[in-house]
Image 1: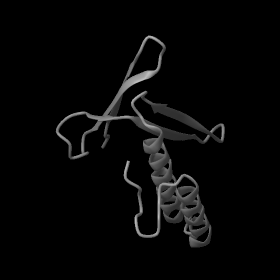
Image 2 (image 1 turned 30 degrees about the vertical axis):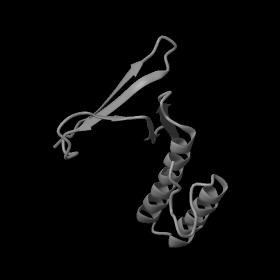
Image 3 (image 1 turned 135 degrees about the vertical axis):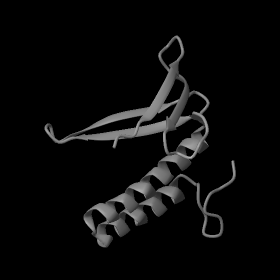
Length: 116
């Protein structure tokens, strides 16, 4: 079985993403979904290297980027715990996520994410 994920990026005259859309066969969405930013990381096992594609549109605000990074880091901590079964190191990463949120001023003890 194969599944397909499509990512369409429209660029402006300076090759800056103007719009980013994605769709997947079993995403549960009826049509392509617009987004303002994306991180795509792929592991090249032959070169032992990560291939990356990080894109964001001019519409992506600084506050949104802070939240996007924070949520991505939390997801990475979750994935790390599932993949290597080491709650100690994934816990350390979650501690860093809390520190990151505090320094970026996007979280407070009684309000996980500050309003825009």
